[in-house]
Image (cartoon, rainbow, N blue to C red; front, side, top):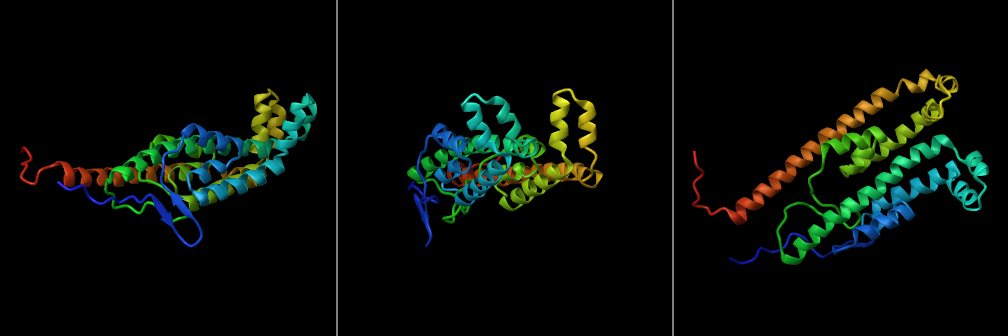
Length: 253
């Protein structure tokens, strides 16, 4: 039987840029994601995601004084590093930073599988790339979507590649978290200063938004992941029926 024409092209072009489908080292992609958030996504030709993370890094790093704190730590002035770091900004920053490294590694592994399919001519009916974003239909873990959403609302949708809700969730959470001083209160709890923690976390106008935001974005990310997995299973089922099940095969009753 003739091999079907490939549904994955090796190059996706538009007037502004192009995306190349080829094998990459997941460790190198993860290293660049750690060196500067957003660069890992650029290596994967996920330009929109990369630009969003680069903007996030510049904004959060500047307002948290992270680089300044790193500099003081490198020259041995630990007390100055503690003074300049902003607890609220750095607390929001950490979860997104770790997620970017993990997600770039995961996506690189999946894109390497897709590059193998493109090389050997396997067929797919899905729209894979548009020159700005390159992404495959892979199976995702609904529990991980909930976990990332609970760490920072919006990251679960980033995991599902729903960039609109990802940006909305992280922006909304950043606003509410900083206005309610929730991370400052958590810091004082961790250092054992419960009285100070209670005194800073007394902004009900903003803190009462937190439960609704947490529950909504966790629920939304979970349901979207479940539905994406159903689409993935349907795609695999169609492919197996087309190529591996003889038309005369009788299903047993």
